[in-house]
Length: 295
Length: 280
Image (tube, rainbow over all chains, first blue to last red; front, side):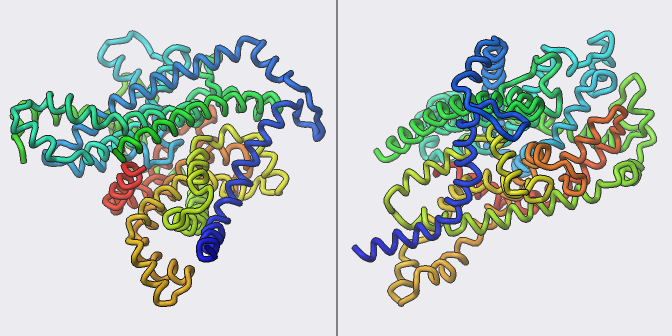
């Protein structure tokens, strides 16, 4: 028993730096956000507790509900597209054809390059007067004049999604490739011997066995997309007239732009609640999957 | 080897890859071509993809237009390096603890670390801002290093734990039987064997630290002397008359080192990624 206890002590000693660090930099701020959301904290040094006033204000305005809905639409389209392209990409990268290694390396840049820098490049591509997209469409006569993609609400909304997809696709592709490669080869060989065609094998072996990975990745991707800040901030800063303002952008503007810390914190708490729900879904999925593995 | 692909299947696959790669690489190709074009050509219609009289002039003139550029690049590297150092020092013992010891609440703690991953720095910005101010870290390298490292620790613990679990437990036990202390075992037996895993974690942390240098740097630091490249360029990007060719040239210089690292280490990276991903 003493050996066991000393082992536990040793383990805790090894864990201590990580625990202390995360407690101070993540757990305490999380707690502080909740406390602040019930205050009228702003630029001035002192503040009072105001109960649910912040929550009443943000949900009363009507504007915030709109932002929540928009965030979900934004997240849904971005994640769905990432998953489809990721699975297709992984299928291609998994095929036994020459040039595979080169293709794998060339897939990765958007994920590896510092996010902001990739976004600057998109910023130029979207330039209405002289950018590549507007320019090429004009050259081919598909549009008459310059197309200010980021200055018009609907196109700006979809443009930020495209950029988010672009950044997320490599990660999804590599993860899906890993999942595909972990499927035992003899399953395919057995099916092939039985005369199953390639598409049939994909539908009946590859897809069902990839469901766990698909589920995990879409949840992780959902959380990342939901929290996405850099893309929208660099491309549009939430504009034009709020059409690309997601919850994170809204929170940032309230807190850091207007210095309304209390109101910003209330928004952050709402985000945390949504993220926690995603988390719970994620953990349940992981547990279910690991139980399935044990069988 | 089961059935061979038919010729049209191969053609289709290469076509698919071409489309896929075009989507992935178009911004880089366009960005590179823009960096070669003279400014006047950028702002003329009709749009042309290929530069006329292309030159590398922007790669020289940008150092004059953005005097702090060299400093921004240095800052990015410095911040990422210190973050990597901190993360590796914290993660190696923690991953070992999770890989080898079952203790009260170990599963719960592991889950808690995973949950940290889900909360982005953007959500915790307000209290982090207050915390940094209280600690007197605003407008310094630490304002970016300290929160940056925190959000990279959890995933690294998970990755390295998976790696360490594949090192046979018998090796630890043999060392203990020989009278080695636990710490000695970790240092002399596990550490050398886990080196490839640690290298993967270090590379991924470095890339992650480099990539996330935006929101913390934007919010917690306003001094040019500490600004990392992304925020430095964003300030440049926000100006009315953007020298787009120079901005693109500067972007390429900023990403080149990371790309070189990747090309040389991609084999380790894919191996590390897949190990972490599948077993999770």
